[in-house]
Length: 107
Image (cartoon, rainbow, N blue to C red; front, side, top):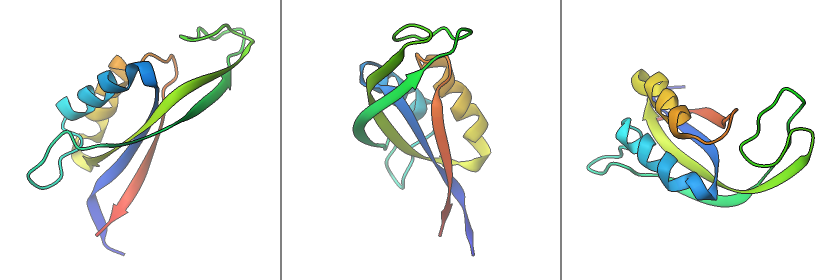
């Protein structure tokens, strides 16, 4: 198995903030493919959650079940800037606990 220098970062964000997060990812260096930058893929869905008594949800109230229209944003990120990209994403993401996944990529 030949590991690629890139990973795929997938972040889930309310549709109201998707463009803000997408722009921040691109500004941090994510989404560069060949001669293009700010590349991403999005799909729509619904996020479901309930915060406990110690939570401070951006949407809804602690202890109440909530469903939110969200966008799944996928970008390619060089491993060497992954930490900085995640920090930038978290700095503009509206959620107290942003949900994101990191997938290894192969050549």
